[in-house]
Length: 293
Length: 247
Image 1 (tube, one colour):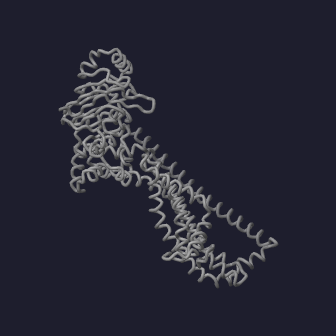
Image 2 (cartoon, one colour):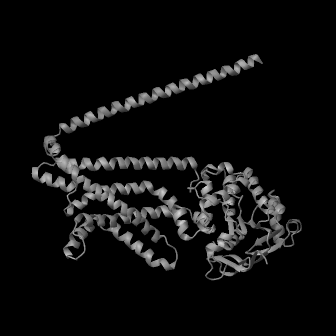
């Protein structure tokens, strides 16, 4: 008995030691991996840097795009102008999210009675996904004030926002629709069987599940919208791109464009990372629970 | 007055005739089991009674109130008729308590407190009091199906329809769900149960209906249907079940 007990405790010690060794190995492996990655990255950057710096056109590029003097000079003004991009983005998004949802819900209404509304939603989505954004902005921001109709604003920013709302609502409504259609019909059957009305079922059962599933693609459209606010500059609004235009025209140096780029990227890259993170989290959750939906 | 009266019910999906004239009269506190091969129309019949499927012809009357008439308020009808599905169909984005209280609050306009109180009592009664705040994904199939039954019961229905509620469960989880149904039957709940669990049907049913070819080919007390079925088709069906060791 005593011998057996000793033996079993002996195996235990062996096993725990082995796993500790394995764990230490794995740790060393991880550190070595990081070191290799770091070294290869440094080598890569140095090689690419040397090649670019020694290419024949580099001095011209450096002078035209990377002037520290013009960077400093245009940074504050473009920064202020970029606030307008953020404002356009924020206002447009706040209208797009509910408006696009309305379009998506109209499109999912069943029965012959609602055919006109369904058709309207389909025509709307098809049309505004088919027209270049810049064209809609030009028509509204230049065309409408040109008509001189009393009571309508002449602000290019306002009309620019309207154009972005029209275009992006079409895209976002399709995202919502995909989400609504991804909720299994049995969910609707369960809710209706309990005596909930169609509207209650939509509000409490279908949409909460649908929207949760489409948050990553929605964020993708957020990124697109943030970029496309620069298009409002083409009709005269002094936003970051247009301000960079003005600065570049005045100095014959293109560094201000780089400044505007920095501002846009500072917003859109974190948004893109957030989107990726949400998608990954969503995938992990689905795998963990298996039968979700 | 019978709790549920069905006359000449017909239903087809496209060219596929599923129910070809169903006549059935069920009294209060009766437990009726629908048996028959897959595709014999058991589920469709239950879905028609709950108005989840529009009927092509015939009448369905619940407590003397014809629910298949034109212009009937389907939401009010459904509040009196609970249905439990094979695949549970719990709302995955809501906790157990929210699943159970949603309909009483929205459809019966109960305030949150009394709805939750009632829900907790029911969940407690069916051994689910420690799952009140859990989400459906974290429950076993048997627990999910018990929650689904409680969700239907929270509406205080006059009639419960159970659509093969154990068919999606692992064998070891079937018992706990059948126990719940047995308790409901003992409590006097009027139920129509579509099932493949013949042993259970024999034990619990006050009446067994054998569906075949879209009609109720034979019906009677459980002892008679299982003991001495008259119709050759019923005998055939039951022999197959016995051969498969399901009875």
